[in-house]
Each structure stands twice: as structure tokens, then as C-alpha cells.
Image (cartoon, rainbow over all chains, first blue to last red; front, side, top):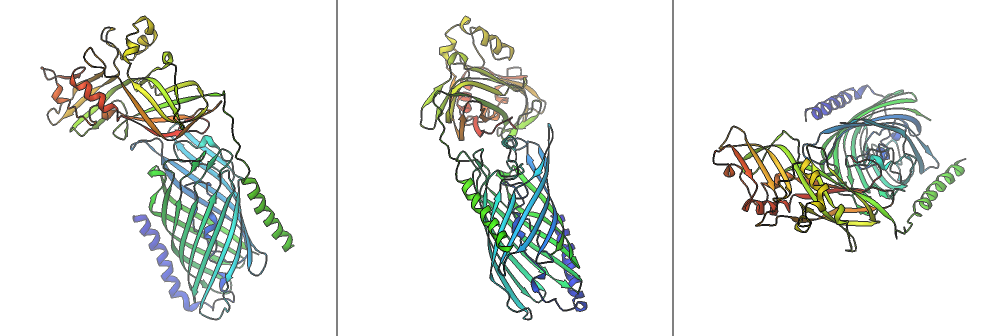
Length: 322
Length: 271
């Protein structure tokens, strides 16, 4: 619990500092959406494509509308190696390096692509296991239903809906799918589909982003189907900007709900679950570059019948605006 | 450029739908066979059984287990349609031994299909025993190696569960031996049927693993409570449970001793 408080305190402090520094800032630049609270939900299945993935990892806010970037995510889990209450916990680390970009195709339509590379490790009592390689590539299209009409009014909002598809470019290896974490994979091995919605409301420099998405997963060629998934999140952010600089502290919550996995059409016991996170982050922008850091700590969780536990998630990114 | 890009996206999405909706092939299993493994993971009331470790039970006794061996026999597998496959009786006697690290029963040449229930005997049935010593010499010798026999006239030990115990009555550890078996008065061989949470898919070149958890704590601490201290010998040095009413109680307890935790249908080794 102390670690949560520490992180929250840390970012709250920045929040307060930002408020104090506000007077020094020049008026927000023309485009409110420059500080872009977008796509925390694009994490669909990029962490491991599985029931304990980084589904709601809210590493979001880009400082540019259109960009290409690189992001690194680290997820720490532990899982029971065995079926007993006193079976040993083993550490599992999921590392992801991801190239991503966001491109407008018309005034209301945007396309996002995510290309992850995973290197995952688990420390079993019989020795370490690692898997690495390209993960599942996701492409999503978004349509803007409500756009902020006028940048000069203090209260503005925006609503977007999207659909996406994830291709099974990451390897699914059924040998990794033992009685421990079924999600120790590079990909789901399946074509998965997403519908997503996001709403952002902003008053002056303070904003709130909410998002929800649903991932429909299909059966892979080993007749294994990862459970359909709901991700949701809410992020409070404050944008502090000058001509060349932007500083955006943020704090929020995120959650993931999983249905049971299925193998050969039958439910796999103990694979449904849920997890709820607190998160905090900070974005810094300079000229066309921006960097961000973000951390998530679970507040409550029940993954795979308690046989898998998430410890924390951490991410950094570097983006270049187009 | 923009149109080309958009078309590419649309094509990508559509191709995904096409590919994902096209692989539900019916398999013909007639006349094909596969293997299946029963994996027995021994525990004590939810904890992993580690020989030499102590476990408290609901009788307020603390058991340090030094041995857990038992005989599994007469395996029958049931398909989802209710049909059964009886594993050939002459091959259907097995030993599980914690000290010798024997946890697996490998069954061969099972008709391919989806099995949802398994039945097995705990111990040796009377019919088999009455076939006499020469008919089963090989298994008898194997059982003797694992301390699962008395003399031929008194027969097999179905379970050998030994160690030491302490309780509020004895802070110094005393030995216990629970040797389950049949005798001239009672037949304590029992058959146990377990449902599986998902089916074991027996196929040529596949090895489904039925992961069974055996809770050894149930032997003395099940529906029937057997307090070891109450079974001490007259010298008060040793609790030996090898006959009488206790064996009937143990037989009833062992009906709840086993559960299928999960079925592993993936390829490769078992975690």
C-alpha cells in the first residue's frame, strides 16, 4: 500500500506544482487537442495477447495529434508454479517494445497502427524460460462523432468511436500453456476484433478522459480461444504549456475484465478474472518531441483463480510529431 | 494516397474476417487410438505434500508425513456420450509413491474421443487378489518394493501413510502408520469416480494429462475423524492403524480424497 501512496503523492505534488506555475504559462495553443489524451485503450493485446495482458495500460497522452513513436512497457507478474496453496510463486516479466503511429485519413477519420516486439521471461524452479519476437499487430480506425467546435471556449469535449483488428503475427505456442499462466505467449494466435469508445472533456487546462473498449477474440489454430475482454479507464490530466514546452501530469484508474478462455469449445477453468489499477504519469513535450512515463499499480485483482498476480506496470515512450 | 491507404485498411480488416471464419474441420476418429496420462499430485489440505514437513489437521494433531504410497487400479474412462472404455484389467494396476517420485499413470491405446469422467480403484479388488499369487507375481513384487504388501495371506496395503505426529496430548513426536487394506472381515477396496472440469481429448500423437490432486489429509481427517493419539499402543509409543473399524472409516474418507484439478490438452510437457 505504501508504494501506491508514494507514487500518488509524487504525482500529486507535480500536479500542485503545475497549478502554481500556471500563471507563468502562455495561453494554451490554438489546438486544444494538442494535448492528446488518446488511445490508452490501444493496448488491447499487445503485452502478451492473453488473459493477463496489458489491456488497460493507460500509457496515453501524446503531445501531438499525429505522430510516430516508440514505447517501452514493462509488466511484472507472479504466478503459482503448481496447484497448491503453498506452491512456489515464480516471477514473470513481460517486456514490450512497440512502434506506433497515428495518421489522419480525413477530417473525422484516423488510423492507428501498433507493432509490438515482446521479450518475456519467467523464472521457473526448473530454470528460466524466455520467449521473444514480434507480437500481434493491431490496426484501428476511429471516427470522431463530436468535435470541439471552437478552441476559444473554456469547456470543450470530444467523442470518438472506433473499430480495430488484431492480426496473429505473434507466435502462439501451446507448449507454454501449462497449468501456470496461460498468457505467457507472444500473441493469441487469433484474429481479434475491437470496438472502442472514448470521451474527453476539458475545462481550460484541466481535462478528463474516459474510455471503454471490448475485444472479441476468436479461436486460434490450436483451438484455443482467449476470453473476450473489456478494458476501461479514466484519467484526470492537467496541461501546462508554453510555446515550445508542454508538461502534462496525469492520474487515473484503469480496469480489465476477462471472460473464460476456451479450448476446443470448452471453458478452461479458472481463466476468467478482473483487475483494477491506479495509475499516474507525466508527459513532457519539447518542439516536435515528447517523452512520457507512466506507472500502474493494482488496487484489486482476481486473475486466473488467484494463481496469477500482477505486481506493477511501467512504461516510457518517445514520440515525434508529424 | 489517402484513398489507397484507406483501402488497404479495409482490405486488411476484411481479410481477417475471412481467415478467422474458416477452420472448423470435423475430425474422423474411427479406429484411431491415443494415450492419456493420469497425474497424481499429492497434497495435504490444499498444501503441497513435502515429505518431512508438518501439517496440522482439524483433529488438533500435527502430522509430519514421511511416506505416502498407494495403489491405483481398474481405470475406466467415460466419454461425453456416457460410453465407457475399460482399461485392460491385467495392465490396470499402478503405484503412486511420493518417496519414489512416481506420480504418473500412463495409459496406452485408448480409443480416440473426448473423455469427461474417470473411475479408478484405490487398492486391489478381491477378484484380482483371489486369482492368487502366481497370477500377479510381478505386481506383487513391485508393490513389495514400495512397502505396499503385508504377507501374501494378509494381502496388499492399499495405502501406506506414515510419519510422526504431535498433539496437545503429546508434545514429543510419536510415530504413526496408517496401512489401509482389506482383511478377512471387510473388503475396503473402493472405486472412485471423478468428473473432469474439461474433457481429455484422446487423439493419435497427443497426450492429454488428467491432473488429479490427492489430499492425503483426508485419510484421517475426512468425513470420519481418526485421532491418532486415541490409537496409541498400550505402551503409548506408537499409533498403528492397520485393521478394524478404522479401515472402514478410512475407506469412506478416501472417496473424497481425489479431485481432478484440470485437464491439460496442449502439446508438450506438463507444468
